[in-house]
Image (cartoon, rainbow, N blue to C red; front, side, top):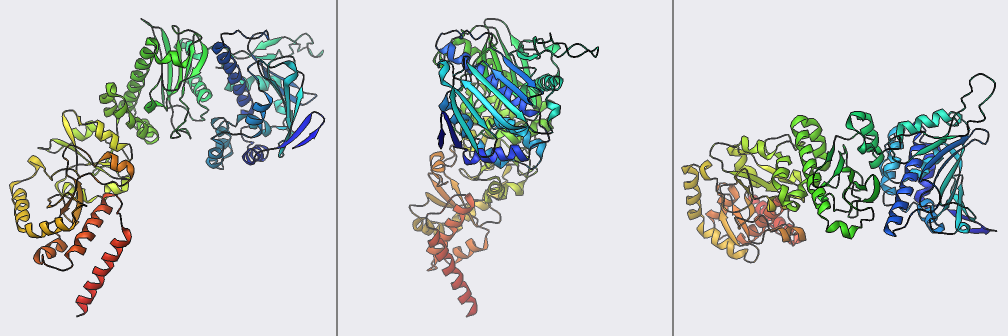
Length: 637
């Protein structure tokens, strides 16, 4: 940092410099987004001012109506965007403008596709909108004064986007922020009031704050511009879109509003807009995005619902208005019954909020149900993006568990391996005659689930099995015990009982094998004491020699163990396939001196095919190599 008089020079943070270079040299295909981003930031600044004043039970300082101004000076080649919002202090300017200390910056750089238009639309989504100024400006001057600070503590920030910026403390009489863009050569088309107005109408018409611009000259007689046309006019509708009659709102209006509140460049998949009147009065305008935001799985990811009271923005939801499993929903909830100075603490104990939350959740689930029934292709898109999140609701939302369960989609042993398109209702409708359970297999990944040896007999019998390969699936099956009267049953759990689907010959063969293999089973159980609860014969295998199952008939592979990473059930059972040549050979020679090695190898193989980890991989490899050498030596002699 260097200091000259009252001016300080700083170097941009590395990631900020990368963003700036991108703005200056790459994103020219959709230049007009710079104005959308600056107006959106100005709107947010005014919203934050309202929140701060409400929290302090204060009224705005005497700086006039809260508003945004846009103007241009063709001779000076400048465009100015200003607001009388909350403003910034010197420290906040350094934090928010100089460093981009945002969690999404790195993700933004990684998300770039090389398509200029798509890359340009990512700007707002990742919170780097201010830097879009450098798409069109060769120099940017930002002047700001934080609400509550004296006039002498205003800050002037200036940069040409080439790696450095300067800060200067100045005297400024008003609260808020003013951004002056000194336009590049070749950007003359933007130094036009009609052009700027058209951009505002295209991208920012829905913003509820007034956006003012100087009136255009009206004298068209050729005698020169109308010098009296200095009046400022509101160029947007400046009304809350959700408060307008639905008959006056076009699909494009909804799409534009969604893009504004979500910073997404795609249109939403679906939306619900309704006004509820009765004990409480409130309006819901909620959107289902068509793609997941970058921070969907971040612990501190933002909720997408903005709470308004009588059309005044109050706060962003932190979980009181929409449950976590619906955190992908974006939109607005506007209440007529909550006080303007409502706090997060008061929200938690409010009957009004409880009523709003209950209604909002049901409306979203109904919207998803309609989407699934009426447009399966769109619902498939939704499920690909948000299915894993929605699954959380099975465990988190008991009241709506049945509705959520009907929205779940699965890959099965009979479906396309790349598509999760089978609902539980579809599964039940396609169950074989005599089948009374919904079967599933859990594994660390979808591929591991599809290749599980536990499926062998089910495939042979043509019984469909749900393939569960996501971490959240364990919570699903632990919480959802049955569906439409059909119990959910893991194929790796309990005895291999196919009920009415198992004929008398199969049952007799299993009982006979248990008797014939009693000696080797007893010896292997003793060898593996401490590792397995039991060793027994099974009819669930057709090609694999062994598998691990859970002894507990009512509990999936122990959840606590799986979360710790072992992946093994509390009471592990090693099941052997009596028809496999290796198992048959061990039974013919139960006194084989290498029986212990074979027992450990079969156990370790079964653990691996379960998707779990073995405790001593080196010992497993050594045993396997010793057995292979012994077999080679035996064949050589």
